[in-house]
Amino acid sequence: MKKLFSFALGGVFVLGALLFWATNVQATMTLKVGNESEISFGGYVENFSAYRTGQEENGGVAAFRSVFSPEFLFTLNKEANFFVSGRFVKEQGYVMEDDIRAKKGLAPLGNDYYDQTDFEPYEMYLDLNLSKKLHLRAGKQFIIWGESDVFTLLDVISPSDGSWVPPAIVALEENRIPQYAARLTYGVTPDTSLEFVFVPGIDEEANRVNISAPTGGRWAPYAEDRPAAAAPKLYPNMMSDFGAAGYSPAANNTILGPNVVRKVPDSSLQEARYGARLTTVVGNVTLTLADYYTHNYSPVVAYNGVSKVTKRELVEVGGVPTYRDNNYFTPNFGVEYRRQNILGGTFSYFEENFFKGIIRGEVAYYHNKPYNTYDPQAKDSVVERDTISYVLGIDKQFYAPWLNPWEPNRVVFISAQMFQDVILDHDDNIRFINTATNIEQVTTRFTLLVNTGFMHDQILPAITVAYDPKGVGVIVPAITWNPPWSSNYFVELKYANYFGDSYEWLGAFNEKDSVFLRVRYMW
Image (cartoon, rainbow, N blue to C red; front, side, top):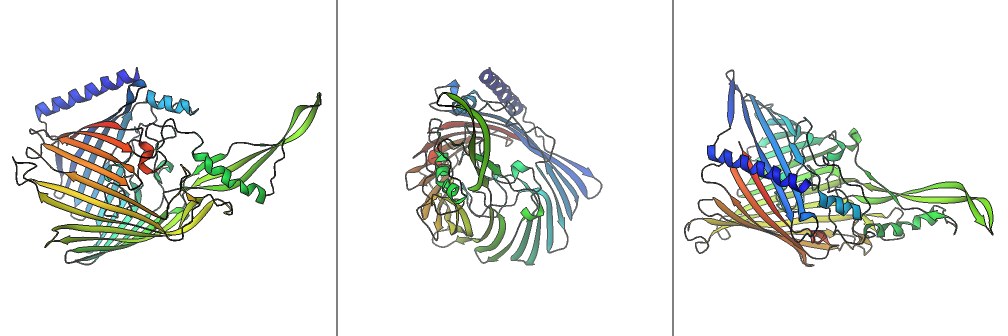
């Protein structure tokens, strides 16, 4: 029934889009209010669908997500603007997801689990020019620090939402979560600016850190048939704290399964995030220097002691019913997003003589970044190590008349990046939380984006590749169609092929290869 409803709703959506195309409606609207003020309306509606290839059970429908996003810009005068947008999402429950969760002993998710139907702002901020050099943006907004694409490095102010789509499928801006924040920018000189950011953490609890797919969900980073004990392998190595705490359970006592609690930062001012960034332009080079005090969005599992319960139970000893006190122990663990200071910067250089492209990069220094460890000497199985992360990238356009002889002046765009993480004081006990696999001292990953256009950009082919030299990654070919009779629409088709060890990076999605279809109407 759910599958039938999916395709029926999809048919209605596509039919509606075709009717819009046929009439070529231009829905953009601006209303004048007085001499200086006006109100502009915009937004989009779209349907995002995914079908799991090779899925033998329940047809493989892995996404059917309809979005309505209205936007309003109130231009009050030359010095003040107010912007507000909404995000309404209707997404059904999935039989596939119910089956996956049932195999893990979990209850099915509600049919409205992914819905976003509350009448609350998605973005809502006030732009004020306080003087010729001083600008303030306050409210729910996106704040972007960074130069990378496909994956983020220094761009950590706005969390990301990975609950509805797997990695490398949509652009970074579509996964960011807006935050209530104040952003003050001061133009020191025409080429230099100083920016201050304050994020009080008053957003809803679910939106304060990165959002992952639910356990057993269709986009959760685990193969459906992987051993259920993969993640809890970490916990027995924390059990050494039992002895340190004086607990030595006797043979007749029982160690119950671990109690794991996710601890999201609360909304107190002590948990606020804040930072500053200096930006300057020197010739063809743009440089930034930033310092940001935040939470580490890669959580660690920390040992929080043992709960001991003594129960008087009736047992049989030598055939005689006897009451005896039995002790039950439950080790407690917290998935914690610990405080983290990040010092970093970016550069972007346009080389106009030889390479004739953009060379860019980011670097971030994490002081005492927390990691989980298998070291039995670690009191709470968390160690802190200074870490340097950086990315180097190039953006280049070139002519390829052999690829498009009908439009020989059409260019091909290439973006290539190398990401590296370096743990300065590394040891072999440092592990990933979810898979209990080693984190090496130097981790290297590459990304590649290539795109071009045909028929005056009516057809736009592209390919995205992410690769770890361990043999793990994803290849995503895509094609977008912009109909010639209107710029308000596009249809996008993608295929994601994940590969590699299911315990390493994107290999965790290697059983989730899927076809993605997006239809969007904008006004």
